[in-house]
Length: 61
Image (cartoon, rainbow, N blue to C red):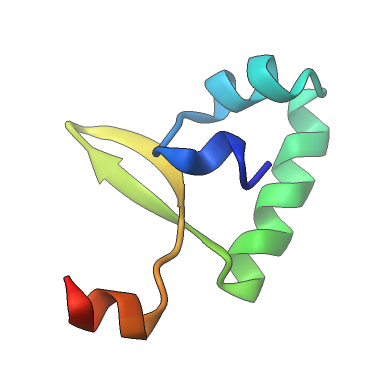
């Protein structure tokens, strides 16, 4: 899943790429959001999932 999130993607895109049921993906997303591995971003009024950058990476940008 993290490889598929090399760029921000919508949930439906991830379902197709990973070839899993949407309910399974939702479970994974909840877990990864809770652990802070990924984040939800709003890009052009569309919610997308992306890998969360570490605080260190954010300071370097």
